[in-house]
Image (cartoon, rainbow, N blue to C red; front, side):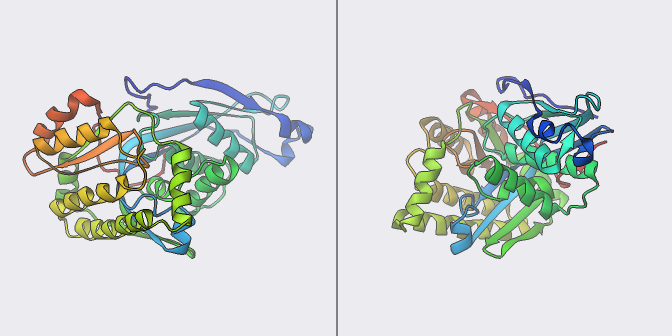
Length: 355
């Protein structure tokens, strides 16, 4: 099965780490834990968020209700879990980037795994705004559920992945990335206090090919937005600041329109809504747009992009540009000197077991 490495210019430091304190407290008794006896490989996709990001984050999603439109892409997190050690050495170890290690070991504690080594590989840049950590989390949870024979549907995989990232590790964020990784395809996701309503958006082969041809994704090479900025946006919402309330409402409404545009195969309409989304998104906080992001969007628009926005929370990461029909190569040529172009195809399957 293929195991992916990060592409050039996007390498992250990989280390091996392990833990054994909880096993030691149990006296190393594997009857309290689940020893790994076979190799499991899973992979989960990242995503392009067309619109609605931030509205999937509590308390806004619970109090007002959010909506996100996104599509999963074939930039994957691949997780391999193998047996390690003996009954005298029941620890769990992980090799991956530092953030992925934390997710892997936190999930292992949740599933009470022992005698395991967890390896995480990615074929997307770190901090790209593609929902990579959520893809890692969903792939890990899926692998561990297979090892422990836990029956989990895709919603349960997404929610447990988020619980580990938010609850166990204290990483702020919303729900959309975990659902994209679990379900795959194009999604319209409605968020409320009652939960998440998942609407799969069927894409005809023609529309899928049009998205793959006309959507240009470029990695800026810059770090994404800080936790301080996220706290500032959420704090502004809590204070009901009109600027942020208007922006969030506009982002939710344009995302709803995007789902309708995709359903009808209207990529031109989608592009126009992406342009509108960016106006709302950048108004949330001054740190969301950067000079490089603005330059990419300006040059791409001049070359024929009908809509563009930063992906994820922004402050760096990737930028999406949707070219007008017949202008894709012009847009790619115009922005290529400003970052790393990332090729992709739509992933229709979500998290999958490879072995």
